[in-house]
Length: 621
Image 1 (cartoon, rainbow, N blue to C red):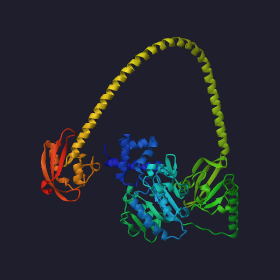
Image 2 (image 1 turned 135 degrees about the horizontal axis):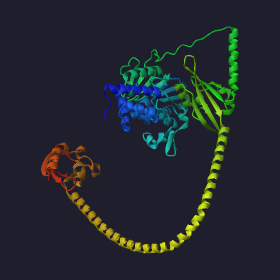
Image 3 (image 1 turned 30 degrees about the vertical axis):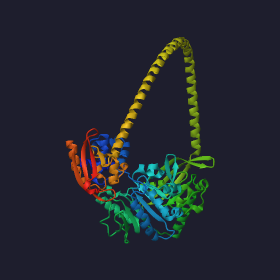
Image 4 (image 1 turned 90 degrees about the vertical axis):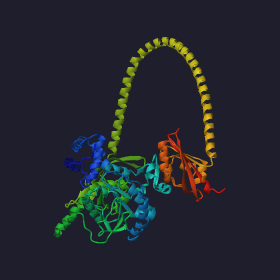
């Protein structure tokens, strides 16, 4: 089934893309049409759908098909330190310049856009830890890792990788930054907390700002020119002046020399030039208002009342401002989680509650970007020997201008409900088990009488069966003895045949070894099947270096290209030919004239036997 090409199919493709955008929020309209058509068409072929309209009907009927389609379009190909040469340049040349432009205690902000399953941001974390030292990296480096693929983000957040995924890492790095967990390896937890994962569409969502390094490798190539231009505008806004942009091998910024200067074109590393920042979006300015002293006093009292009500709330609550700094911790949160008022003003990620009982930072980031409330049910928290369960609600707050201004996190203690639910479930299971046991007992009693009656009849027939079995066993024993004698005879014949084959093989090897000339046997594919001692002495290549290798791709002193036509003619005509004199270099580098004889080898895959010896005129007596 070929790819759709006509105008009708193009219109159907656009309609399908519009449906995907409206139904699932994935906007692929900026992607290259050739790439989209090829990837969607591959998925249609896999499931046997013939047209875009039929495939749209399938998506409307089956929500699970969206996941398979997105996995086909968003090819998540990545690995740790992919393209080692580029990462070496980044660590030894780019990062030192980046650090030199910052104060010793200034935060380092990094964004991995299109992070796929997490290998790239974790590679960045390892690189900065190796450069700065682990302690300084934990206190200074913040890495944002985003993607539009939720399945890939779930895998990335887990930080779990197979041994095969870590093959490119040295044993030292693997031992230092990963812990074995069963059949998989887990990224070290303290460094994992410096990586914040979240869903982000680089074509639509606001970019992360004030970046020292932005890594977006082999992602732009999926978009058309217009979409790429918009994305680069956002990247220019996101990277601070003199910050760095690291792209993939398939991407360049040839038309953006005014905004980005080339650091290394081969490895696609660019530096943002100093200059005015052009916003890819224009947020409305904040308005202020003044009032009378009475009005201001009323406002202050209202705020105090609101703060008291929030602090006295029955459920633990924490509020963060737009920068992720703790703004409010109510009384219940302080009591429940051991927090104090001194924690207000600290980065939320520095608090234990940000990752225990559940990883909240990536969920907060996801809630902020998607602008929707997220819920975590039955989060388990262990306090000493006791278990607590919380339902956690993460709610982003927006101002009148629709900009994100804060995030509230509320914890509802459902421990009692969970305990009651567990007890009720246990009682129900006990009752169901008792009822099943009673039914089973009644059925067993009813069948016992029948079984006893039938047992008498079975015992009567057992004796006859045993007698018959004894006769069958005697017959089987005789058959086994006969079979054993036949096997012993066959074993003796096989041993004799093996000895004969070993003797023949040894004889043939001795013949080939005793021939002073170089003898090479090629199969019909012109691969080396035999390479005798004379060939080793003449050309200096051992047999284990050349066996099963294409003869005419070997690199030694004999110019094999001159022999190829003769070998092919010998294969076709099945006639001997030669000698052919060829100027060559022997194993010690001395120029010789080599005479080559060609003979067909008809008894094994129709090959050719080459016999090579130094011309007598070149060999002084």
